[in-house]
Amino acid sequence: TTLSRTVTITPEQLLSLNGGGFIELLPAPESGKVYYVTSSYLHLDFNTTPYNLAGSIAIYYYDPEIGNDSAAYSGSNVQLSHINGSSSITVVSGDVSGSLTLLPLGIYLVAPSNLSVTQGDSTIKIRLDYKIVDLSL
Image 1 (cartoon, helix red, strand yellow):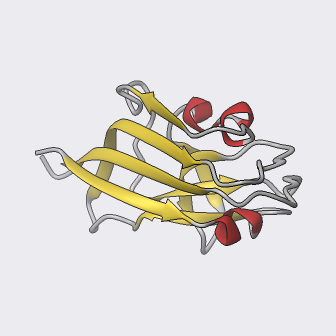
Image 2 (cartoon, rainbow, N blue to C red; image 1 turned 135 degrees about the vertical axis):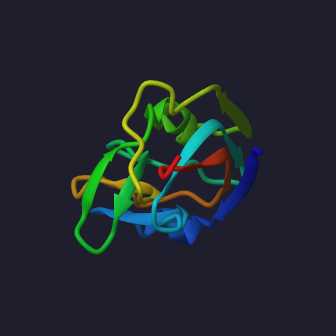
């Protein structure tokens, strides 16, 4: 069964990633289970001021308690050029977990400590379509 979750990221949340940080997209799964992301969608609903992100943000398996992260899948759906644009956009990514190690962690939008962003006022929605894999099988 494929499940979906959509997270709305406000301009305030995105601007709070200046200098590093994270936003939860999916909480950690139950013990003995992992997420398998089958597709993702990013929609930026342009308002009036484009973002000026300098650096990269990506979607990761992540443990905020220890900061241990590993790429969940390509960050191509959250490229700088997409988020910094001055028009509304929707970006779709296909089977994104395919050849990667699945980790029993939550999935987050993560920014490195060198990220710089000081302006922007558009709302971003990220939708993840995923399956829950039971490791006890």
